[in-house]
Image (cartoon, rainbow over all chains, first blue to last red; front, side):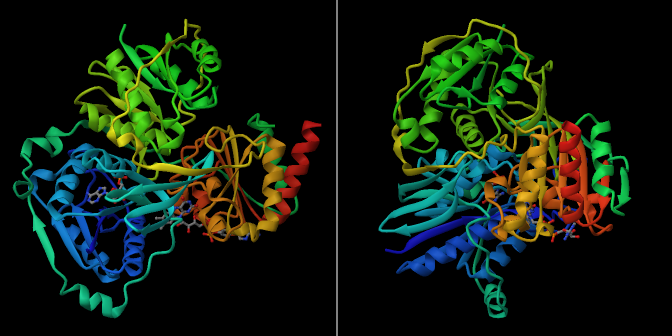
Length: 261
Length: 320
Ligand SMILES: Cc1cc2nc3c(=O)[nH]c(=O)nc-3n(C[C@H](O)[C@H](O)[C@H](O)COP(=O)(O)OP(=O)(O)OC[C@H]3O[C@@H](n4cnc5c(N)ncnc54)[C@H](O)[C@@H]3O)c2cc1C
Ligand SMILES: Nc1ncnc2c1ncn2[C@@H]1O[C@H](COP(=O)(O)O)[C@@H](O)[C@H]1O
């Protein structure tokens, strides 16, 4: 039987651009360039490698996000994913992690999965909580923050490098996995891949397709509320000296003045 | 007064500093009740009481070490049900965030991660966060359920406030998910004898400019002269010069020390994301155009191979 791999990918504002908040204190996604969260490229890469090792597997990429989020799906398809699912609904604007995980979980059940692969965190909100929430909601093992992952004989194994120890983990499928940026460089889409991606199917779903009520998601129903957002004052310009043989000593003088020595 | 659950981060009963910070913050909201899972509750209780824990709910079972995350969620949920707290606080590390995430789903509560400050508010605790690579500061609140909040290390100075801190056994029943992910083996990291990166008051980081693993002892010597921790940029980590556990930045650790020294680091946005909230920032870089200089309180444009050893020697001689 075919191994159904679903990768959850997020469309995020470009971190190298100017990111800000919209008037309703949600992340401004209109006035900025968006892209596939770089950390989700690692998830797509691992999914593709697992597929290449398997006898018969299929990789679906799944996103919850605005219309433009199709860009993220196309990028993943051009890397080599087989098909895409886009959950899009006006009522989703402003949904927080709890709501997003609910929508993703319903969509995963709708699509069908043996293995879910997520990134370690999104590069905008960056909470790093959605994969654990998905495991909780789906009632399947959580095998997260892996820097190495393998799927064999209905089991997923991997290495999780923590602060105190490096752990080897093992769980039976179905399971939710998340991978770190230590898991291996993501491939670049080839020209052929980019062309092929244009013809790959993208299924669009809205909340009613997933049996979710509008009052379960969205900004007004979020479980958290941002009350204030202030741009951090620019750091006041510091002193910069050119080393002309005494740079280390000058720096020591500064540190002593600040009572660090 | 309302009780606030504080999840204890410890190594066999040795309580780690971020937990003391949590207890300090928890007292702004209510009475801290500590939740200690695994061995060493009695030893930990002494410290936890000293920092204000009115009691310590303790559970020990092999499941906590043998399976990933889920057993701890069962235990924290048991504590949650026993106490009906006003808020649940956990340290913002990988495991703390995952436990928080699952608890929030289970009890239907909102979750805030990576808070850098916490105060009581009319409608519940208000959390300060630093977002978009620390270019914005936000204040947020949980609007549904019991606030579940993870707090970054170095967010408060731990203050002693002696309380009873008596140990009570917590009864935990493990659910079907608890044993889903087995920890097959665990290789502990060797201790370096240096302070923990995220907890350190001083961090000295090296980047691509350090130009080889064999040169990292220069960075280590400077860190040691100041009693600090050692960090590295991703470029240095990817090159295999320093372990990933020491990476500072978006996909590494985020640090907020009193003093951050960057040597041979350009200051890319992803690196800034992990160090921009440091109190005092110092950089040594031979390129005067390097973006890191936009952040510094003091910068030296120069060759780190000249500046760093001179600085280390000068610190040593001043310290005598
Ligand atoms: C999704 C994503 C996540 C990322 N996460 C992180 C992260 O967590 N942490 C992180 O650090 N990066 C991260 N990065 C990478 C980041 O974009 C930069 O590539 C990286 O920070 C560069 O490291 P660097 O400053 O050491 O190297 P470079 O940018 O190459 O800078 C080296 C600097 O050293 C200086 N130099 C060279 N020789 C000397 C000398 N002898 N004396 C003095 N100065 C010298 C040079 O002038 C230069 O400014 C991430 C990137 C992505 C896309
Ligand atoms: N809106 C979304 N659509 C699809 N996947 C998401 C979405 N939000 C988060 N994820 C997944 O969850 C991971 C962690 O996200 P976060 O918890 O937001 O940091 C990401 O790397 C994605 O794999």
